Amino acid sequence: RVWQLLLYPNDFAMIKNAKTNTCLNAYGNGIVHYPCDASNHAQMWKLIPMSNTAVQIKNLGNGKCIQAPITNLYGDFHKVFKIFTVECAKKDNFDQQWFLTTPPFTAKPLYRQGEVR
Image (cartoon, rainbow, N blue to C red; front, side, top):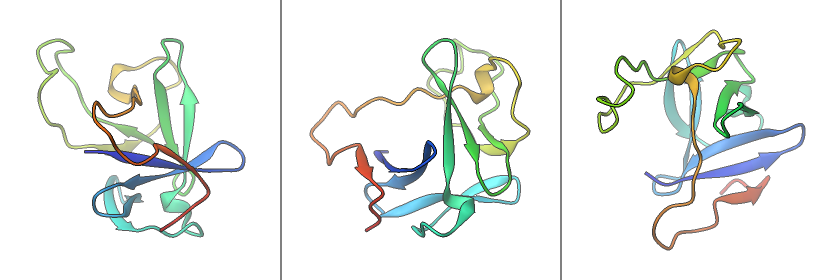
């Protein structure tokens, strides 16, 4: 999947699916896709840098972080995981580390300054 980061003040971002034009929305202890709405705090995420260039992704609405439970770091590499919002780890935690990269093919810009389509 290709995601776009819609950047906002104070280091917040909305995470938009480039194909469906929906944004990640914290819901209960999980995440759903919802029409993008910059006034919805459940769609605002803070990218917190970690020591290895990964980021921890914290939701403004519930104060929790995105986590994908990993049991075998190398063996689970190609698996698909459910993602949840849980209490943010206070130290580096593989379950809450996310690496943001550009797609390996031509795509729309990854970053858009505060724009919702």
